[in-house]
Length: 465
Ligand SMILES: Cc1cc2nc3c(=O)[nH]c(=O)nc-3n(C[C@H](O)[C@H](O)[C@H](O)COP(=O)(O)OP(=O)(O)OC[C@H]3O[C@@H](n4cnc5c(N)ncnc54)[C@H](O)[C@@H]3O)c2cc1C
Image (cartoon, rainbow, N blue to C red; front, side, top):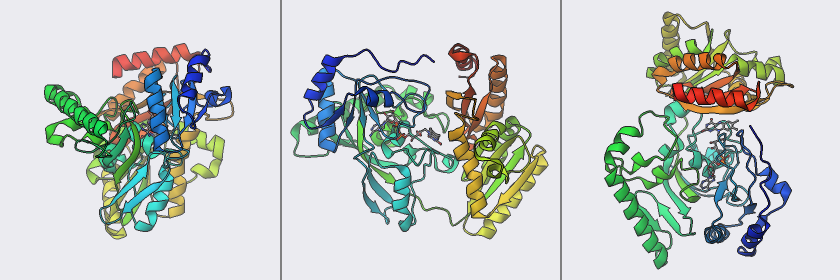
């Protein structure tokens, strides 16, 4: 991929932007702009400037200045997006430095209100004493922010049970592009009821959204929400009357293109009383994916898949101990079951293992009850995904076919076709994903340069998209 590290200078616009935001930290230095030209994707776009608002008032000031000067805005949390979501050529606004307070936890109602820049691991730490958790758990949880999770409608290893971030959002406070501060839930209201302009703007916006939903009922009902993991595009089906005209959920996944999230009130869950982890070894990922429809009726909390390239990565980067507990095989499923007691979970685990052995594809399955060993095995899935951009000292891989999702019952066919196509284009890669949700991530090994990867991506979009 051609890297444009620094855009042509536009000093005049930059100077006007800085002048329009007195007192706000707007960094125009080449070093900062170069650093923010990256997220976790293959793309590189240098911004005009990077802003670090100290509070909501400064954020409003920045948005108004950008609207006046026609400067595009990209909001950014941890910058861990894998499809260029967190980079842009205008002003990048970093919310992760200041908007990082957990404002309240209501243990009885099982909700929390948090600022957009709160990192998921920090939220988890605050919720633990209440015996509660925010369910979506992307592997990037040590850096991913709530704002970014709402931006991407993130989900993680437990998405097969808990779904996506949008499933857990109650209410969101946002700033519109002109800085208007509104609250969205099953409608749009001004945060300050005494701000007449904001009240009018909120009412207009709600009316426009209702009209749009009413005039497009057929397409919203038939094209959207067809599979659990349909996360691309806007969730406009949430505006359907039978969905309760849920503007908050509709906003989730809009990648900062509609509004800037300031705070979110999210629903919390109680972690299960007892769980068991089953690690299943298969001859290859297609075999593993073929067994997913057998596993889903057992209502697992997680069904994750990895291939042997991830294991090779862990071997090369973390040593043989890191993968010693894996059963035999060249592809693995991590299946987590839960229940009211350990005995109940054990009975279901045994039943599932029996069913999988009878199906004839399972090479070896192990039940892991020891918490230390369990954590070590989850690290293969989670760290392996992160490390797979550098599988060893000499190899680099690139994102480029990310988060592709199909109905889980068709995942095996999809992977078979994808593998054939990848081989046809002479590429190899690291493959892992939320198999229970029919979702895969692929890091392609860099061979033959960008042109070959582009041809493969285009062919995959044509034949598998
Ligand atoms: C190793 C690795 C593993 C990952 N694993 C997963 C996974 O398991 N599941 C998953 O879903 N994703 C995963 N991701 C992708 C990514 O980490 C998540 O989507 C994460 O939630 C993004 O959070 P962030 O704070 O880094 O957001 P950013 O990347 O900074 O931003 C994400 C999007 O949200 C927008 N945004 C950010 N803040 C705001 C705001 N305040 N208001 C409005 N819009 C905003 C941005 O403009 C951008 O479009 C992974 C990434 C990596 C690198």
